[in-house]
Image (cartoon, rainbow, N blue to C red; front, top):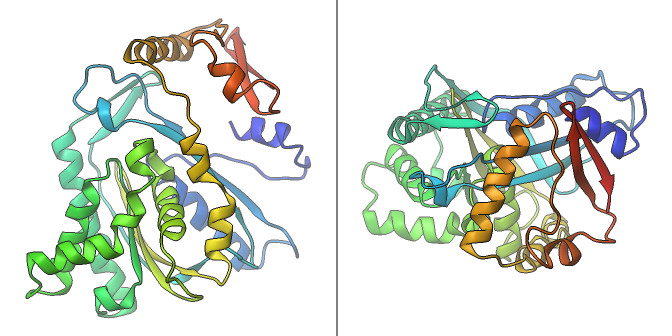
Amino acid sequence: MSSWVLHYLGLPNTCRHFEVKIACYSGTAALKMAVSWLSSGMARKGQKALVISTDESLNSLHRPWEYVCGGGSVAMLVSDQPEFLVVETEKFGIYAHEVADVIRPLPWLETGNSEHSLYSYMEALAGTYEDFELNVGTIDYDSYFKYHIYHVPFSGISFRAHKQIMRMSSFDVSDDEITESWKNKVSPSINFSKRIGGTYGGSIFIALLSTITAVTDLVAEDRISVFSYGSGSCAEFYIVQTTAKSREIALATGLTDLINSRFPISVQHYEAMELAREQRIQSKDFTPDYYLIEGLFEKSYAGKGLLIYTGTKDYYRSYDFS
């Protein structure tokens, strides 16, 4: 996929490109790799890194987790002169262990154990925070951070995650205090994910956009905690700081308008598209039907200069601008 990005963005042939895959942790892994490269002195003056976190769910029709599946991409331009957010490079916690909670044994098959995944997520959250405090020292979790971001395969998990950390950091915190803290400091992060669904490695970055778009009290150098988890598993707890331009840049992405402009479809059309998508993944040759849903292509793609999938021949995928 990275070679297509290189080609269609017209990036120079001297650009190093590669892919990072560790489930939903992949976006953070790539971001941290880019930040490390820029901090190491190896990058030439003025060089930047383009990090794209992208994934989509596979066919989950009539499966218990169908309702939380989604797909999406987040592109981040990373430099040593950040304008949107600043990563605190020395403050983080890591936790990794082997678990087959969610796996893709075949390119067209996603399976796993939801209960194992939930427990693994919570174990990793506790582990990363413990490692974070070993690295940074004991902190007051509630006052140290202005807002909190948790990986959200489904929006409801953010409350359970926040409750666990609040309990770890304060033994006498009440349920009402935890709920109030979640409403004030976490719930803005799920405004978008409640409407988009799970976006895998991109979920934490969409949650960051969601928070910064929704709230108005952020100032430069406010800390936001970020917990990233990937099945398998690897997880990280780290910090980003806001800048004076954070909200301006978040609003400029236009994500709210993009979500509001989506094309409504029927359940029957949705299921037909899911089956077509599954066929596309497995086929040696495939030609997409842009008119499977009347009016969708014309409204969302035609004449807009967007890069679209045009088909597969002998397993080779083709793209063009609409």
